Length: 158
Image (tube, rainbow, N blue to C red; front, top):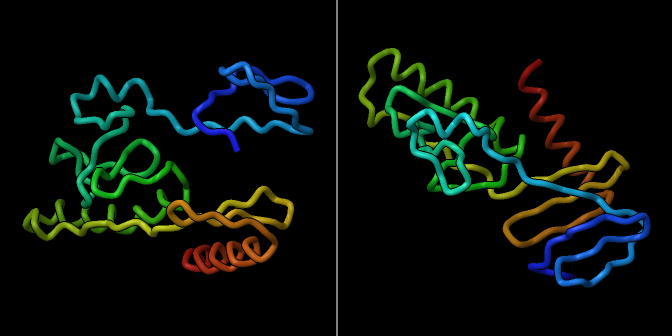
């Protein structure tokens, strides 16, 4: 395992690291994180250290008239990687909070969102990766588990 050493080049049979080390590989996958859109810097909203809209647990921004959800924002109390699994779960509390604000309910009545602690992803080959905190596991059973979770979630929209 290599930590804290950036890849500076990808070659046909491996990758070169900033330290000068070369890692041999049959395949190299380049994986990047989401980045905040630059235009957010012009909004006047409070942003997190990476440039995403900083939110309270109610999905409200520093401007009480503006709410946000998904990959453009970070709930400061519960920061999570940018992932559709976390983003879609913000929809129901966002909709509820918008209804409450529009109906003039007291601001203290806004619903806080607490994200699930785990997520899974599947490369499409019958296997999946499941993570929770620093724990991760991969395999066909993880794909089956993810498939069941996804089917149940999509069942809500039928």
